[in-house]
Image 1 (tube, one colour):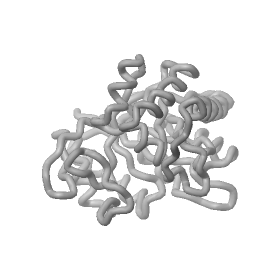
Image 2 (image 1 turned 180 degrees about the vertical axis):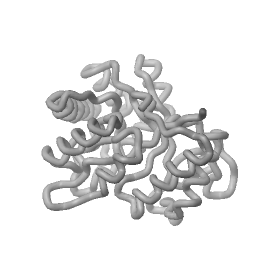
Image 3 (image 1 turned 30 degrees about the vertical axis):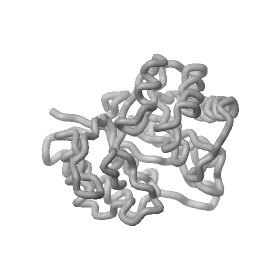
Image 4 (image 1 turned 45 degrees about the vertical axis):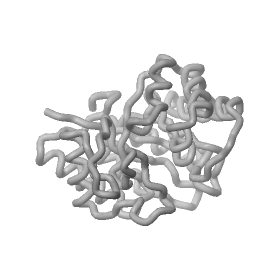
Length: 255
């Protein structure tokens, strides 16, 4: 049976401000990218999300970010590699501490938002994130954009990697994500999205925003937890995959 991971960004609520439907998403996905406090998430919310993920056997990943709560981590920062290195260690360490208190573990790292997009192509910042992961736990897997140079950079440094595609985002003919500032960057039709992801899982290809076919070799699919209708999109993908004999399974746990 073919299998692929399904992940979502969770633990992003802050105090009285609620973001996403974590409990519902955890019943669908196989991996959870959990906020570490720099772009979103407070200690109690992060703790509860880790606890719920562990109870469901969902793999736990550190969703590290630029220090940008106001911009939800989506503003690009020309941050010094030395600061990015320590910021990344700090965030992973915080999540690892919460996980340890609950008898579970963090198994991978997925950068968030602008940091994710920047290091996909920026070797200077990318190396800082890689070095931070190696410094705190070389056994962690780095999740990054499929076909991006960051994956080869991490492999050369000795890290295991997993390539990711985005269910609810449009792609350019070069295989990059269409900027959120551009029309059509975010997809909303759940049936269309499920069809695109089934094609990806079976053939490793997607249709770019200009109608051309691009190759995307990915082992994980992301549904953004803060997207409108995120739970419906994730559930539709899962149901479609199950009907077509494609299993949803974490790249880390095999769950």
